[in-house]
Image (cartoon, rainbow, N blue to C red; front, side, top):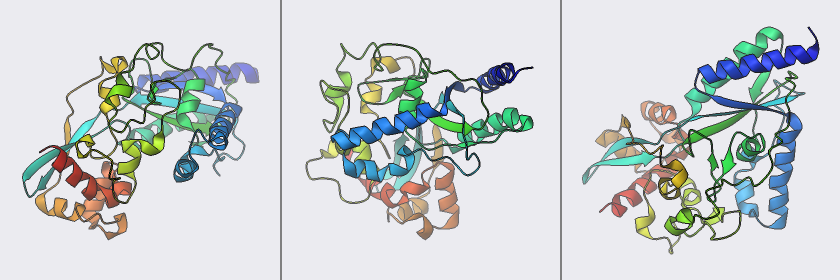
Length: 314
C-alpha cells in the first residue's frame, strides 16, 4: 500500500474511533497551527489583543513542538460535549450551589482522547502528544467550529458547551486544509446582539470581531486581586468564568440543561477554600478533590469568588 493510501486509511480509522467515543475531530497540516499562532501574535502587535492578556495566557497561545513529537506533521483537533455543572458549598448562611461553566472540567476526557489517538497511531510506529496553541482559531480554520460574536467557539451539535483540544503527531495523515469560504462567524451572529446586551461588563462590542477580553468577567475571576470598583456586584453568576452570553445565545437553545450536582464541600472544607490558599497550602484531600474538578489552579481565587457569588445571590 502506498504511503498516501496508508495515511488516508489511518486518518479514517482515527476519526471513526474518536467518533465512536463521542469526540468530533478534524485533521490539518501542522502549518495551520503555526499560521494560527502568527495570527494571534499579529493581533497583539496591532493592539487588538492587549499585551498583558497575551502575556497572561502565552503558554496556551504559543505552539511549541512537544519533546515526544519533535517533528510534527499533522494536527488532530478534537471537540467533545462539556456541560455546565454545579458544586455545593456550606458557608455561614447555609448551603450555596455554584455553577462551573463548560470547558473547566476537562482533564479526564482529554486523557481518554489522547489514549484513543495513541491506540490508533502508536501501533503504526507514530508518536502523539497534546499541543499548546490557539486551539479555538485552529478549530475554526479546520472547519470544526465557528466563532460567536462573544469570541467563543461553537461546534455543530454542541453549541459553545464544548471543550476543544489539539494534539500533534509525526504521522503524515494526508490532512487537507479546510477550504470552506466565508466568514468565520456563525451565520446567526450578524443580526443578533444578545450577547452584547447581556454581558455584565460590556466587553462584547456591538460591532467588530474581537471582545475586550481584559474587561471580561472571566478574566477577573480567574486572576488574583481585588475586583475593579466599577464591576457591578450583581454580575457574578459562576464560581469561575461567566455564562451570561452563552445562556442567552440562540445557537445554544438546544443545549441548555439543568446543571447536575457533581461535588459537595463540607463546612470545614468550605472554610479552607474561603482562605484563598494556593494549591500547595491546601490539605491534600481537599487539593485532590479540587484537582478532580480541574479547579486546583484556581484555589487562590475560589474563596473570593464564592463570597462575591454569595453576595450577588442575596
